[in-house]
Length: 247
Image (cartoon, rainbow, N blue to C red):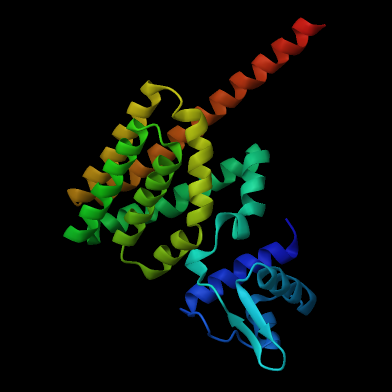
């Protein structure tokens, strides 16, 4: 992954952290380099990349301005370098899942203690949308609802840092869910298992059981990891058998 791509990610987080709006001016180049701990050449390359996408606008002598809110940046614009790694590199794919265990275990823990009735309703709505979209055979909507389910849990934690981290990773999370669904959700039996796991997470949060909520969400993600690894190994065995048959 190029340094400039990492700087793009850092700029997005900074814009969200500062709650910048369209038309706001970015800090001066020197200050940005200090805040992001990057060189001027890497920063300029990242700004040029975002300017060419129409996200930032450079005005000669006036500075660089935000033209599009960070929350509207598309997956292709921001997450494409990371999503390519997830799609092509199994090790990176599992790194993302492990990071989810660490982060989402904490969000579920706090959600079980702090979720409001509105939070519980939002979690339930996302849960039902997963099943509805799956029943219609709309994998894209099901994946989006799945990612929103996990984001809704983070929002129910009412911890601004955890929420910010989950929101900044939302596109990456959604892409990770899409890849997992390609494999794990391909059989009705596995879908039923995953649907039950989602329900267990939701139920633990509703009954105010932090430890059960943490274990449920971590167990869910660990289950997906194990299933994907098993399916990857099965695919590798088939490929080896196919090569042997051609000899």
